Every structure is written in C-alpha cells, then in structure tokens.
Image (cartoon, rainbow, N blue to C red; front, side, top):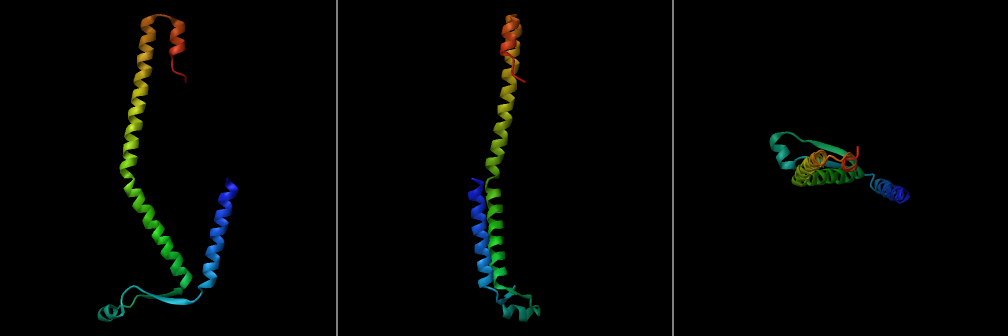
Length: 118
C-alpha cells in the first residue's frame, strides 16, 4: 500500500514539475484594477512566474477548502466528544455495579471473575 501512495506522490510531483517548466514566463499580478490604483496613487503590482501564480492559487484553494471543512465538522467533533464522555461514564458505572454485586454475593471466586480486567 505504501508503494502505491509513494507512486501517486511521484506522479503528482512530476506533473508539478512539468507545469512549472511549461509556464516559466513572467506575469504581472495586480491587487487593484488600474483605474482604482490611479485614484489612490497606489499600484501594488508583483511580477512573478506564471507557474508560481498557478501553484499559489491551487494552494490557497486547498487551504480555504480544508478550513471550510474543519469549521463544518465542528458539530460532529463536539457530538463525538460528548458521546465518548457518556460511554466512559457508563463503563465506570457498570464496573461499580459489578463490584457491588460481587460484594453482596459473598463469593470470592465470582468476584474475581466479574472484576474488570486491568
């Protein structure tokens, strides 16, 4: 299974290298439209290779998607924590009831068999 995962990442890496080699041209990335930049007298322009724009766009999209999914699953994680606490409380209660029953019966052998494993 690890071989398949490594092979997948090698293919992804090769695809990224091919995209980078195919798009080496410099492009100007503007943060504001030209008419707005002229009004404010600020022109935040950056000149970077096209493959960097592509990789940064994909990375930003992935980051936003991961964050969105993490926020969306908050309710599910909270419910899971609550149920885990409830299960632990019920296990402790069962262990307590078994110990009380064993003391009431007075049979030491049965008490040892019913005792929870540690």
